[in-house]
Image (cartoon, rainbow, N blue to C red; front, side):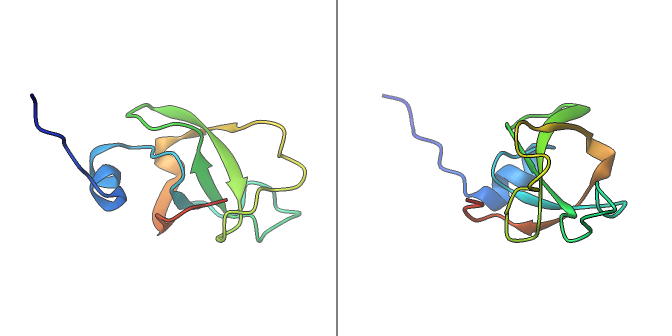
Length: 89
């Protein structure tokens, strides 16, 4: 049988632009200026795209209360440093 490839989240972040469940700081500050503590993104899926739907969250992964119905399209240039690679729930 084939070998099983095991990667940790830190390795996946190096390979893909967007990684589901990883918290990224927003490069340009909060998405919603009226709620400045929600200045991070969690991608809804993993891949290498120019744009991906993301949850608008705080640095602990709590979803913005006014934007919690669905992800918001975010371009890859808006992703800043990784805040957390752990469970964002």
